Amino acid sequence: MDKRKAFEKPIGFRDLLPAVTAKKRFIENKLQDLFHQWGYLEMKTPTLEYDETVGAASKIPGAKMFKLLDRSGNPLVLRPDMTSPIARVVSSILKDQEMPIRLSYHSNVFRAQENEAGRIAEFFQSGIELIGEGTPDADAEILALAVEALKLLRVGSFRLVVGHTGYLNGILEEWVEDQAIRDILKTYLSDKNMVGYRDKVKEVVSSEKGVKALLSILELQGDITKLEEGLEQTESTSARNSIDDLKKIWRLLKLYNAQENVTFDLTLVPHLEYYTGMVFEGTAENTGFPICGGGRYDTLLKTFNNPQQEIGFALKINRILDISQLTPLTEKIIKVVYDLERQEEALAYAIQLRKQSAARIETLRIDDKSPSDLPSDEDKEVIWFVREGQNKNE
Amino acid sequence: MNNNNLTIAMPKGRIMEEAIEIWIKAGLPVPEDLDETRKLIINMKHVQTRWILAKPMDVPTYVEYGVADIGIVGKDVIMESERDVYELLDLKISPCRLSVAGIPGASSKDSVPKIASKYPKIAEKYYREQGKQVEVIQLHGSVELGPIIGLADGIVDIVSTGRTLKENGLIELETIAPITTRLIANQVSYRMKQDRIKEIIDRLSPVL
Image (cartoon, rainbow over all chains, first blue to last red; front, side):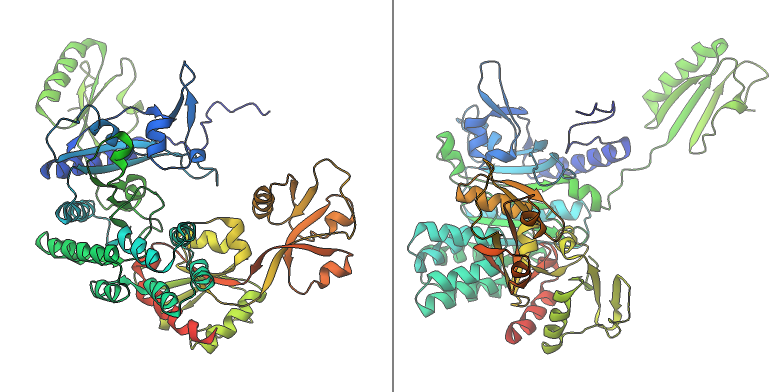
């Protein structure tokens, strides 16, 4: 085996240098201020969790998680998301707290990427969870908050596409009896394979009307009028109730002034299996990958023996860092340069200045070096504390 | 990913020629000087469209990363590249099939048969799902050589007429999947440029 170079790090992991780290912190602070205003309090959870609890609840395939063993041989995972750990917390430590509970997080999560070495294995998510409310009001609240967040982050033109798992499940149950085949059809949709979906529908559905209905749902993408069209395609109660829910959500979004950024796709099937109601995905014009995703997962808490409902979203901070027009304020930098003779005076000055000023204060001892040997600091204000004859302030 | 401009990744070669015929039949704009040009990018400003001429295997990559909004590519490449893209339409051109081929009557002398292929991921997955163990050897072309010179016991490759196989003394043993050319789209473009992509689908669908 080749000897590793001293600078190598594990595949998929990255260092964040100061400029990017500053932007990330700035973005996260802005987001947390917003989340806080909406009543979402920040929390942290451990980096490691048990595979059989949080790992299983996350519904992320085992091969996509980093696993290790604790000292007793129990399988652990590096947390693959934040939703499952928070579900664990609200089902245990917070279980007697009054509902609804509103929580937010800014955290790194881990996925083992087998596909390609260039893909990241550790990425950052900022998100919120609303627990204990199953109403369209809660759905609308998190959509509106996602819209506010993306506006705040100045990601350019963006769109939230909203669907509902109940619609798709309802219309599939209406025409396809076999659960296994319904799952295959849903997998085609979540794999974004419209060709495969169409071929399979034609292969397995015998009634002409059924084929027509199941193919027509592929057209149900666009503005609010698509909900009416969706209603016409189905007699299924659960599908029709889902459309009702979406209509209620839409009306509420008007009150939040958030309709403009929202469209519908009734065939939207997120990859995670735990979604049970409204689902959504956020896209922006300047990146080829989604920047946000979320929805309702009312059965997730049941895996932690908690009957409550839960809804939430996560923003993909790595993508947002690339496209956000937000820039941290350029800070003023003051450099205090001194020699041994005036050290006391210089450091006292720096300490005082740090108390008074928001600027970044650096100190540098030069002793016998001539000030002209120092690197030029064009972007910095330099204050000199050097012995007579060396004083550059004059 | 600029607002209303649409970038299409086209695979250089035979598929592109057939795609252009469909494009013309559907009344979609096609560059005029395609034959003479060696350019990799062709701008059609008047219709806010740009073609990227790419290696077929790279088309899903360009589309996944969003530097191309949509692309034309064979199902074999989609299966092998495992990219996260929308597969929107079966263009039904360049039909062929992915098959296993080998020397007739030959049986493997190794404990684990060796399979040569340009499609290592597909071959790997196919045999895994069959519960058979094989050793997949990746080659980049003229895969038929594998069994002839004794590198491999069989091959996984695309077969259209079967002539190449026959000329090299190989026969088709199993079909893995039928293959045609597909229209794929980036997942964000599919949302943000829905109107333009839908127009292309609506024009193409009746002529397929």
